Structure formats: structure tokens, C-alpha cells
Image (tube, rainbow, N blue to C red):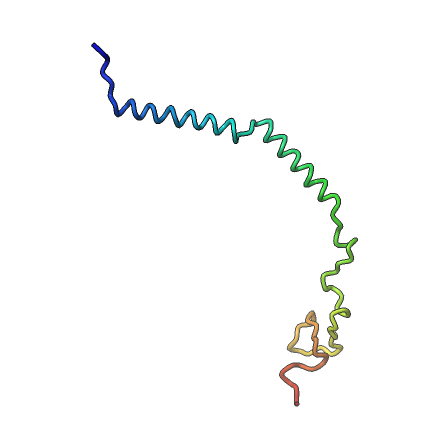
Length: 102
């Protein structure tokens, strides 16, 4: 007399085995070992450090990011008005935009 087999359990066991086999194939095909990942990360860090070492700083490039008001054409007011803060540079000279008689 033969052994009794539960077909539902046999089907599930077969599916689990197929998934495990597929996972092993994918690990071989797509996976990288810990050593390979560490080596790749170290190479990327070294390349970034090398690249950062060759960048020009803003002082060397001559950037002053608009700090020079003479190059922008702004005129600094000689007379301070009581309702204007002292650190504000007026581009209209001594006139205010609302007091234009014309």
C-alpha cells in the first residue's frame, strides 16, 4: 500500500522550492558580496574627494555674489530719512517712490 499525500501541501511545498531556486539564481546573477560593496563605496568616496579637491573656491573664481553695489548701478542715499532703516540702500537716490511730483 502506498503513502497518502496531501495534494495541497505538496503543491505549496513545490512552489516554495521553486521560489527558493529562483531566489538563488537572482542572488548569483544580481547580487554583490559584502567585499565588493565596500570596495565600490570606497572607490566612490575617493573619486568624490579627488573631484572636490579640484574645484575652484569662490575667491579664486572671482565671485562676489552681488556684494559690489557699484556694479549693479545702485546709488546709496547720502541723506537718511527718519522712517527708513539705515542699512537699506535706495536705488532711487534721495527720492522716495511715492513722493514723485510728476
